[in-house]
Length: 465
Ligand code: UD1
Ligand code: CA
Image (cartoon, rainbow, N blue to C red; front, side, top):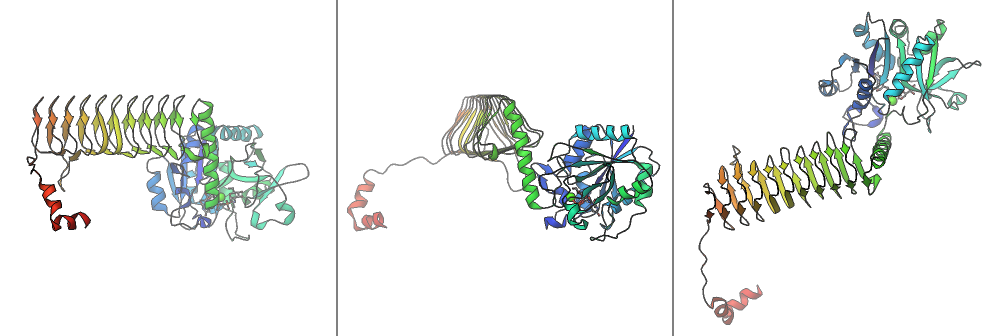
């Protein structure tokens, strides 16, 4: 059976009251639209057409990396009209069209496959994925005749009181035979409360034409949830959060407060890792075994080894080898690599910096465009002056070097293996291996100066003032 997916994503999402197209609102670490697209791919469907319209430029730019075809619906005249907008792309396609709403993030690939199988087994022209959500408000209702056959779908806004009492709802996910769908869509009208071309009306048209229309119900009551408002977005986030966290707890991860930890769908975590409150692990992050992550940690698109400690920190596009420690109050920006057992400590910022195994930057430092050799120690308050306002320059601190506190490393500069810099030095010239580099005025001690000061009125004034 040949299947092409048709994803409806042109609507404005009026109920979001937003300048951002609804399907681009983030749900955890990716736009809502990413979820149905992932599901389609996981179901093994390689052809997807996405109908865009409202905020088309932004949606199209998101889609540019997704390998989909794009149909533009110039004005959003309803879900039926959205399908019409893709007609030219589907012209001549003989297989099954899986219609999916771009605002339905929880659809599972198993369900898509089961829906398609049911559709084929029934030899149907259309098969509707239905469900019985806890709160059916806003969803179209499935109308059946006395023998239980589907006769039509009635939208919430068009439904009578009796129809609103029906628990079975339309998920807006369907299989259609392309050859039946396109002619039927062409016959839609706008005789309804919203004055739109409803895709749902195709069902009644097909039934009237004597076609087989089937329904396939999913047991998972959240799977078909559509996001129409900010409240539903928040609800969807908490459902997603619970699902993902439950899965990791089952895999042997401790999550201290599961409602205060957010873990993206693609993140992986090793067993015996502890995840603290107010922690976000997002994007393509992987965390090893036995780590302590949080409280208050954000790790995004990063690779973390085993037994790593990350507390009160933000880590982006970085790699942290086993047994390294990060934080508290630390920011590791893109391109940072911490070697085995290395340390980026309190109030430390790093960018594009490689720290060798066992090397330490424990306090109050900025390391940018730096390479720090194994076992080196960077004293408190040390800063790489890597930027002259125009260009960025590298700093190299070789193996086992000892950088005195409050050293300014004025790049480009190299401190040789085993060399030492004196505290408070501004180092602008390379330091040979094993040398001491000091750059500061000599200290002068004036004997009894303070005592004399205290014995004059002047001194008192100063001491009080
Ligand atoms: C739709 C269904 C409803 C179903 C519900 C499930 C219709 C008429 N109603 O209602 O039966 O229970 O989904 O979530 O189909 N879209 C376009 N172009 C448009 C209008 C909408 O592409 O002109 C897209 C939207 O971006 C959205 C999807 O179609 O992704 C559904 O539209 P929405 O307005 O959310 O429909 P609902 O009112 O939720
Ligand atoms: Ca919807």
